[in-house]
Structure formats: structure tokens, C-alpha cells
Image (cartoon, rainbow, N blue to C red; front, side, top):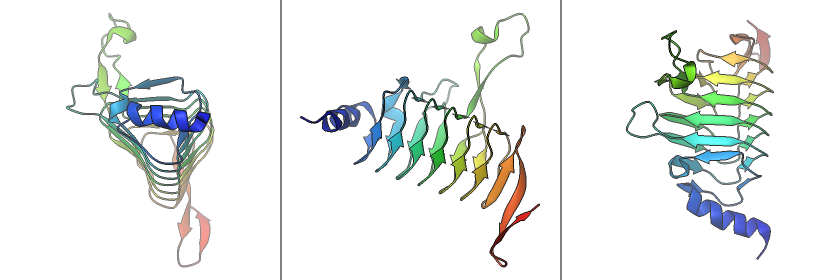
Length: 184
């Protein structure tokens, strides 16, 4: 039996859904596989950590990666409530996407021992691209956006935007009338 077929059969039992022609190359870790939905033709590269567990008291957690998306090497994507990566999204290497934060309020307790705090739900819009080392923390990114390398997204980014920086700020938007990307 070819290696890809064996991997496909194993992943169909590990995840809530695992689409045809999808594959994961040597994952680092999978937490809550039954809460993870993988569409068709999805590629998840080397040593990525996927998680979907309701660690903040929510009833359920969900991580969805829709058709045609490519997740780069060493990504870390963890949902404690809901993260949706829509169709044909591309992430570069070392991208972090999370809908939660570590608590740090009590200075007498190590951060490691404090509760996990629920942040906003995350959506990455169809056709968007997240550059190397991008962090998305409880925010939504619109359709066909570009998020520059090393950016930290903490607030929603509208459709057809280019955003960069820490925190990420929109620097260009697509003008449908002129059919050009224009500086903001």
C-alpha cells in the first residue's frame, strides 16, 4: 500500500474531517484531532502543531482549514473556541495563529500556572497570504490580504488589504475602481 494512501487512512480516523488529496508532512503535534476539519487539497508542511481543545471553558473548540490552503513549515495553530482558515490561504513558515492567550495577571503565580484566557475568534479570509513569522492573535483577516513578514495582527484587517508591523497596520488597499493597490 503506497505511503500516501496509508497516511490518508490514518488521518481520516485522527481528524473530524480529512479531505481528499490532503496531507500533513510529519506533524509536530496534534491536539484534539476530532475538533479539526481539513478540506480537500490541503497541504500542511513539516513540523506544524495543530490544536483544537476547549481549554478556556467553551463547550467546543473548532479548527477548520478549507480547501486548497497551504500551511507552511513550523506553523502553530491553536483554537480554544474557533479558528477558520478559508479556501486557498497560504502561510509561510513559523506562523502562529491563536484565539487565546496565557494569563499573566497574578504576579505571584508563574504564567505557566495561570489560566488560559479566551481571545477573539480568528478567521483568515479566502486567498490571503501570511508572511514568515506572522502572529495572528484573536483577530480576523479579510479576503485576499497580504500580511507582511514579522507582523503581529491583533485587530481585524479588512478585505483586499496589505498590512505590516507590530501591531499590524494597513498600508495599502485595493481600489476596485482604478484596479490598483493604493497606499493608505
